[in-house]
Amino acid sequence: LKSRQRAQVCVLGSPPREVRRADLLPSCFSVPAVMAGEVRGVLAPRFRCLLLDHDDTTVRGTDEIHYPAHVESLRQLKPGLEPCSLEEWFARNHDPGVFTYLKSIFRPEEMDREHAIWVEAMEAAQPSFYEGMPEVLADFRARGGLVAVVSHSPADVIWRHYDAHPLAGRIRPDIVLGWDTDPERRKPSPWPALQALERLGVRPEEALVLDDLSPGIRMGRAVGIAVAASGWGHSVPVVQEYMRRECDYYFATVPDFAKFLLPDGREPTSSL
Image (tube, rainbow, N blue to C red; front, side, top):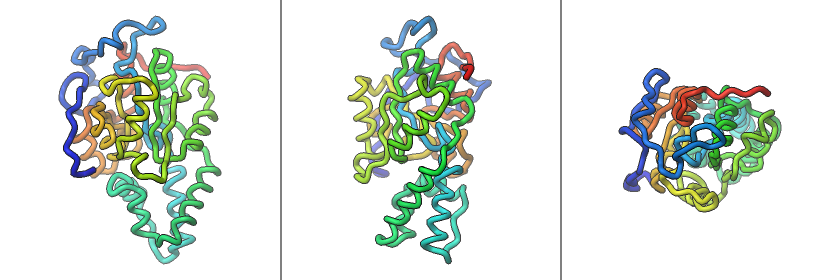
């Protein structure tokens, strides 16, 4: 997929750039005709559908669950091997990808135990949502927006994270496409994005991929969907450089993203 020719993408507005709170110019962007007008008395979102990453975009999955699980796997299976840093773990998830990286460390007969340790860690902990993300999703859904979660975490785990939140009834996604043992059915393969578009009845130009790492961006590019970086989860230089270069939009904070997605510019609020 690294050699795949970059797809031509129909995007809203100006060329790729970093989007900052003080640098948002809503008049620069046009809203697709299907999204014009109002939904439930408020302006419709800029995109009809979000293809939303989960870990490190919506919840603090890596630093609270996945990286500690990796450290524990090394402790049990490779006690003489020093774990990589959290920053390096993010970089390895970015490139060459988590599965490829793990196969470079563990022998085939060790991978089952590594996977079991990861599953045990996910069952034992509930990651926190990034501040403001549940409110953004609730506002987006209230305006008629559709949400498809595309993640490398298992689908049942993702559903559990949403169902445990106080705003569950307002932020629950329409569909979740999680980890699949078949690499052709998980990002960066285009299959999850194509499935989401088909099942939700959405055209590529009506959707936006929001992700913190390259697999989601490559997936979106392969399908012709606009891609945006969620830059609030970590600040790994190699990842930031890639995301700023390859994404149509880069959002440093959740409020930046909210002001872009919800075109009246108000920061969503909610009482629990």
